[in-house]
Amino acid sequence: MPDFRQVRRRCALLLPVVLLLLGAAPGPAGPVVDTDRGPVRGLAHGAYDTFEGIPFAAPPTGPLRWRLPEPAARWEGVRDAGAAGARCVQLPAVGPGGPTGSEDCLYLNVTAPAGRAAGGRQRPVMVWFHGGGFFSGAGDAYRPDRLAVRGDAVVVTVNYRLGVFGLFGHPELGGAPGFALADQRAALRWVRANARSFGADPGNVTVFGESAGALSVCAHLTSPASAGLFQRAIVQSGSCSTTTPPRALLPGLGRYEPFVPQARTVADGALAAARLGCDRPGGALDCLRRLDTGTLATAELMQRFSLVSYGNDVLPMEPRRALEAGRFHRVPVIQGTTRDEVRLFLAQTLAAYPIPDRAAYRARTEQSFDAPTARAVEAAYPVSAFPTPAVAWAAVLTDASFICPTLRDGAALGQYVPVYTYRFSDRGAPDFTGQPEPPDLPFGAAHGFELPYLFTIAALTEPQLRLADRMTGYWTSFARTGVPQAPGAPVWPRDPSSASALSLAPGADGIRTVDARAEHHCALWDARWPGVTRTR
Image 1: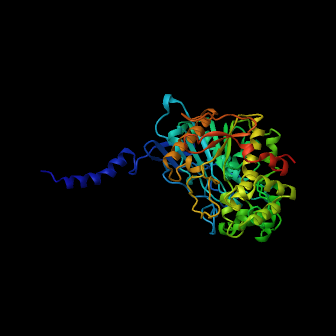
Image 2 (image 1 turned 90 degrees about the vertical axis):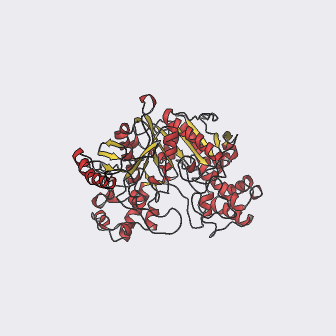
Image 3 (image 1 turned 45 degrees about the horizontal axis):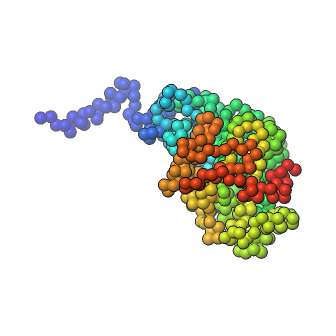
């Protein structure tokens, strides 16, 4: 009788030889796709496949620091795409901590349904730009398997340079070229070149993003440099008009505006270079490029250079002005906010700057607005109508900074293209931030709390899963056809004026149309806070 253990040992010894003769190398099997730089091997997950850590541009390191992205090098053989690439140099999104990540970070990740689409058709592509204030975040933090499987879409998540590495400006650069946006455009060009290999349609691309990712989408909507790179856009909690009143969160903070004149960024860059000892005329950039990553990735520099510059070839006009002038790409748009956007930001400052009573609430209104506006705010948002003064102030800032500016942008867009507006309203949404919730300021439907309904981030209850399925249906059908609709879900009305919004919450009647302008006092903000929701 043969010794089977000896047979198995001999087979194990022979296996590498057999593989070598067959031209294969031992290793885990996985789907292989050809890209324009070379083939990649991903991972199979049953209903979907993933391909992570694919370089879409050359590493922007050494002499390529602060240069527009260049093509990635070709590779020989099959590249492993089973793990995400390095994240870009960044600071923690919340709290203290030093920089992490690498300058060699221009990687993207593809999630695609397994197998071919029904009827041999090509799937839509959805390209996700992450949030994080332009100084933190990464594409691999978002797992889009729900969008891919339930929505039958190919989803691409993207890294882009952050902070001083992504939005730096200097006279020797000729301005502030917006390397972060250039990285995103390079990723979109990669999608156009490679979508077919993943079973997707390169002519049906939707850009979508949240927070800084939404501001990025706004920038691409109004940038001549992004023409033809996408056919639809989804803007989540970051409109072209998003801004925060001065001293709203801390006494020393000025008004937050994510888009600033290029001249301001260039002046800041020259000053920063001088402080770093790199102010020799004609040699400042060479000096700065010789500095190590840690010297540049300070909290001061990463946050100072987290604003997008306009007044250049990339963004000729301030984006909200471009919308008002009708200077944007004619593509259908979904846009929206969460119901309690600012609660998350306010919670980070309450310990140092509390709002314990009506007097403190009144002081906030008087510090952030002129006297007539402060009186109008107190009348429209009386403390007695809210559980705490902190909740009242968060409502003021949410409406003034996010909801009403978004509705105004929608009205400008709606003159030319289909616009669908939403308000995410689930105040029981899971908190995935790890940030302490103050006792006088429950998070509710705070900034970013819609993300677990689109991406696999946090556990959901059964009613929330049903809402997630409907939101997934809306988002992916919009990507496919330009019209958001989901089986069994209410019709999402197209409102050119953007006065109404589709409120998204769990429950039998959780999805319904609301008069958002009226509910969020937008007439007050149009009249009382010029330059934010009304043309100067």
